[in-house]
Length: 182
Ligand SMILES: [Fe+2]
Image 1 (cartoon, rainbow, N blue to C red):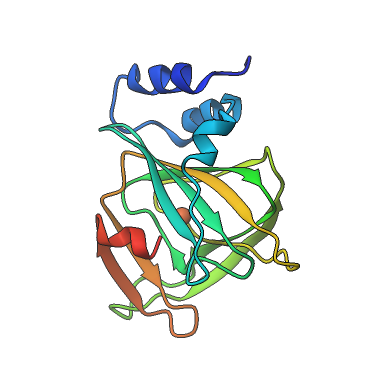
Image 2 (image 1 turned 180 degrees about the horizontal axis):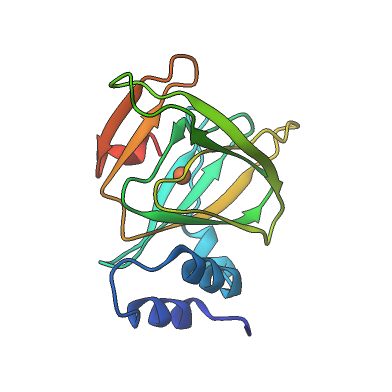
């Protein structure tokens, strides 16, 4: 697929017949988009406290955030509720851990998770998480190197679950409060 401009990308998204874009289709579109440098730079914010989530776009089909990660900053383990997600790396290396539930919900409020894969992605790489997928992302580059990712969700984020890495305790977050734990 030839490269898509940002406006062509959004036009394709908004022409989609349903508000839930299948993850494979969203992956294909995001892999093709050429992010304008000025668009990214105008949406970059940094904090020593935690990685920053800067709203880039939101419609009834898609939510896009620019995530700016200082060295050592990472998400908690989470899913995306009824949304799928696709993330594109535009600067630095991202570590992605994917998990699956190894329990059947026998202990309400808790999950037992198993790591299914751990990936390091480079600038230009794109990864995705299906509806129900559980993952964590972070900047473990060292050397005070920064990371920028552009993360997409379809349909837009509404509610998510978080999973405590030590205890497996499940937390529930709704939009927009969930942005603080994404
Ligand atoms: Fe995520």
